[in-house]
Length: 290
Length: 266
Ligand SMILES: Nc1ncnc2c1ncn2[C@@H]1O[C@H](COP(=O)(O)OP(=O)(O)OP(=O)(O)O)[C@@H](O)[C@H]1O
Ligand SMILES: [Mg+2]
Image (cartoon, rainbow over the protein chains, first blue to last red):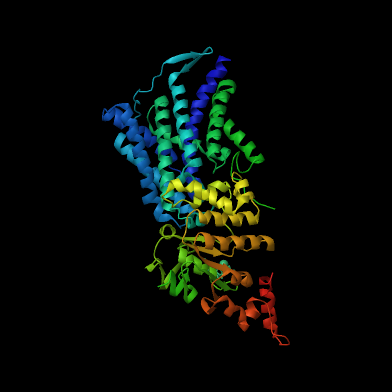
């Protein structure tokens, strides 16, 4: 039972990280049909930025994190404006290639500025171990879950109720009709990239706190693919629930069946789900009235 | 100076396909102006030229000008044209299928700066279309065709336009519903003072509500006048209202022509 609780909480914290990265991915895909292969590098960049602000510049962590989020949002908007916007109207594949280019550029910058040696992430998130129902749980895991939850809820409310959130979903449905409402497509794309930047940075900070800052954490960008495919490429709730499911599955498999399998089982589940629901768990259904 | 003025405009798609070939028309404030014509005449293209929606179709106004309240608008982006008070209700309704009725209405209000008036305006849309109120939380994609057309018009109202461009609002609707929609179009024109440019295949219906009408063929205006003038014109009678002079012999081509246009009768 303690083991179950332990696995559940660690799995959940990993799942939340997946959910955040997946959310950024889905927001971009939903509004512009672009698959962003730079999501993992955006996450890594966020972790390095916090490292730079807090450790290298010696700023208080609150300000460091705040600056990281602002810079990440700004970088997302910048990427959209200068890398993707010139390609609007070109085949989607060119845009996807551009995101691959963007990921290489980000990797190169990180390598040039911080070098290949892993860094110790500043320890502003307490790592005390507390006992819950017999299980020993790191406080950082609980905080990770809480912080991720706050951001996920905030983004969900944003998409559901705000003017720009509704505009974003309108564009996803019918771009030309959205244009006829006076919705600015460019502005909405920029916002989507800004949100993706923030959510990746938050995930990066949480992850780096657990495993340290290194080029390895960018791999998470690829591990998030089964998450978004499971949840449905264009579904925001799908990204969140998909992330949690995959995170939990990884840890349950690792804990009960054996290390090594934990990276395979999610894919098996994914394939089974896709056989039953080809659009993913929450993917947009094509509405066909009869 | 007319409220809306198109002067000799030329529209080209994909840099080569010339669709509007020097089209001119005018609308006075507060009027309902009908724009009639066969399939492919260029009616939708005309509306998109006004509302700035040609760009995604790779179309462009290459000659002439479009003046709205005296100012040229043919080089403005669509969002700026909406801000100035022109709103197009696109052909085929084009509601946001995965959004609820209410979210569709909010999308229509996107450019509004007076956020506090949006709720009251939504209520007013519901008084025009009570059926939308009942379905306010329903996903728009599952509404019936008639309800979707109501939503498309209601969504336009949310922008408080001074000029509404309606592209075939009767398309695919049962006669009773068409009447209902047209009654509301007239009410909107009277009660809100919205100027309406109405594109229709159903010539009779459109001429019954319009103050003035244009008939276009092949990218040009070929005839214009008051509804009475148009209804009494022999060509209009034959091709647009489906009436022919008794005993007149028709060539095969004309018969085919007639059949093709028969659906305007309804
Ligand atoms: N995006 C486009 N690219 C190229 N040609 C186009 C495009 N859109 C329309 N056309 C052409 O322009 C002409 C006019 O089309 P338009 O849609 O304006 O006609 P319409 O009068 O609205 O017809 P309908 O009654 O069928 O809606 C047609 O010959 C059409 O093939
Ligand atoms: Mg048309």
